[in-house]
Structure formats: C-alpha cells, structure tokens
Length: 377
Image 1 (cartoon, helix red, strand yellow):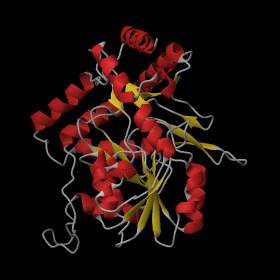
Image 2 (cartoon, rainbow, N blue to C red):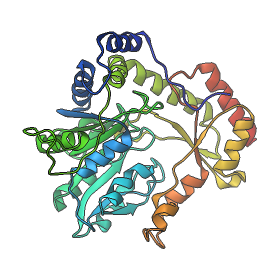
Image 3 (cartoon, rainbow, N blue to C red):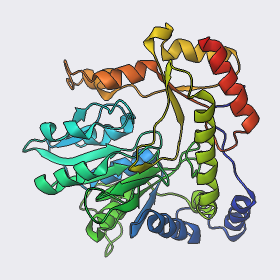
C-alpha cells in the first residue's frame, strides 16, 4: 500500500530530541519552544509566535482573541475542516458561509461582501490544500468594514501570495503573514510536523498577549492562580518544538520536495480530461500540501467509489472536506438550513487527494499515476 502520507524525519530531529531528554526540558518550557516560535513567526513575516497543541486549538485561541458576543458573525468558507467553525459556535457566534472558487477550491472572495452585516466581526480565510486565498479583496473589505482577518494557513506552510498586484508596489508575502492573526497546524501530515501541535502568529502585541493568556489558563502575570478570564491549557511541549525547529532549519529542502511532488503528478496526469488537477494562479506560489483530484461526473464515479478502486489497487487516498452547511451537528443546531453551496458540494462528492507525503518516491508516483489511469480507463 502506498500511504497517503508518510513524514520524513532526519538526524537533526533526533539530536534535538535527545537534548530535551538529557537536559530534562520535556514539558512546556525550554529553548526549542522559544526558538521555534521566533523562527516560524519571522519566516512568515510576523513578529509574535504563540505555540499551541494543535491547529484546532490555534483556531480556538485566535477566535478567542475576538471576544465574540452572542450572535456576532464570522465569515468563512463552507468547504473547510470543522475546526474553523467550531470555536465560533463554542463562543456563541454565528459562522456565515461562502462557497468555493471552482479552480482553487479556496473561498470565493467575490461572495464575501454580500455576507457582511452589522454583526460581522471577522473574516476567517482558509488556504486550501497549499493554494492561497485571493487576499487583496479580503483585506480591502476588512479595512472598509473594520473587520479582523484570521488566516488559517494550516495547509499552506511556505505558500506565497502576491499582494497589491494592482498598482505600483506588488509584494510577495507568505501565507500566515498577511492577515491580522493567523493559525498553523503541525500535524503529522503537514510540511512541518510536531506530531500534534500548532501556532498562532500576529504582529499585534495586544492580540499576542491575549493569545498567550488564553493558551495558558489566563494566569494573571502579577498573581498566578488568580483568574479574571477563562483560558485553556494549550501549551506545546519542548519535545514537539524540537521537532518543529529541526524541520524549520531545513524548510527550503522540504518546500523543494513538495514542489517536485506537485509538478511530477501534474506532468503525468495533465492529459486526463476526466479529472481536474490543482492550479497555481499567477498571483500564487502554492506548495501542494496535498495533491487533489476532482473527478468529472461523466466517469460514472464519485470520489468514494474512486477511492475504493484505488485502495484495492494499493493506493491510499483521503476524501475532500464535507462543507460546513452539510454537517449534521450544525444542522441539528439550526444552522445553515436550506443553504446551498454548489461548488463546495460538488468537490466534496467528486474530490480526493493522492499520496503526497514527503517520503514519497518517484517510483511510487509513477505507480499511483498508472493505477489512476487504469481505474479511469
């Protein structure tokens, strides 16, 4: 079986982990946490990094910084992981959805303004499968309506976006360094992995202090066990940060491998008319976190049937996200009744992604592509 993901760890990770064990710095303090936070924030173009236990808890902290009141709204794509809507609902807010762009699979930014109301507090963008959201229109709306932009860059480590491309000063910026506050996941299948783990980034010291407090039970700096707010224990360990820092220090090598995987798949599959492949817009430098396919309905297959055939032939896959508006847990709460997002619905039913891990070899890519062709023939 060719696995959908297999991480590629090296000798530096072992060296740093050994240092943690021999020095005893295995919990939520130590040099690796500080260096990883500082290093990742700087790489992404932010000044403050707050390491946490997962991408989900990073989103909980970021949304927590908004101090949502009951009924406040956050605009986000329907096509994403449930972690994006979860903290909004938990804090009494209302997730307000938009559909996906049919080419990039990211949120359709042309729909955002029509969803803004007097209760809107933030726009939560999600860079999908390694391709950036078109951020300029989002930033313009945030400025116009005084909204916070949260970037979920969990799937876009190192991806870049050409900001202000209409004008005289276009600038490439890394995803996670464009909005007011951003979140990352370092789960096992991410470009940088700490097993589990995540990080919140910002260049706003007020947001950074709020995020650090929420991460650490909202202890008061002047009186440790005295609480005026409720927070969480979302602290990353020094062991996890050691893994992350080691990969950050060879991140250009990791990015190069991801780009190679994406280009290799595209070269081998681009002539198959019955599948839609990932794109790379002129204003984007995508990282192919996962290499997705969307099947044409004329194949007679949906993604689930296609996945079963690939699995039987030795290729492991994963399905695309199911839209938030189709999640039973939200429907039971009275959310998104009668709402339809046709692009999100189609790619959820017809989309899956192929093996994309850093340990993937050229021989394996050849095998996967040959099996894809055989199944579709």
